[in-house]
Length: 108
Image (cartoon, rainbow, N blue to C red; front, top):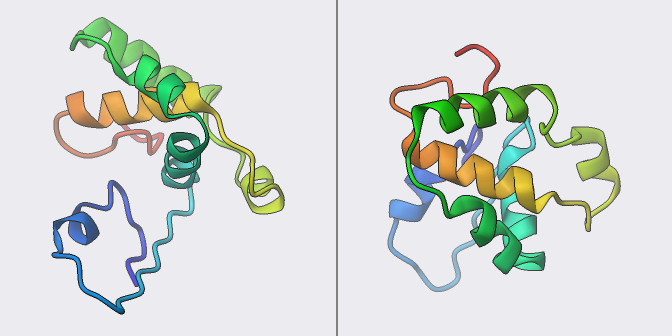
């Protein structure tokens, strides 16, 4: 069990093992949205994640994600098909560009 999963860095660094069950949790919904969107519409997620590194775009997307694009946790819990490919792609792109902590936590 990996609580506060963030990017799933610890889990993804582990070698695969037969018979192993992994459980992840992320209260803010970004991670769940990413996994759902990648499964449901990987081309759309890739479209939004494919962008050159730019501080201006990073700031704009970060602000959009924390203010308008934050996945609705209650909707994620109520509807297992709910996902937003744009938010997922921008979250992935930003996580790759961001330096330090506070990516999409509303603090940075």
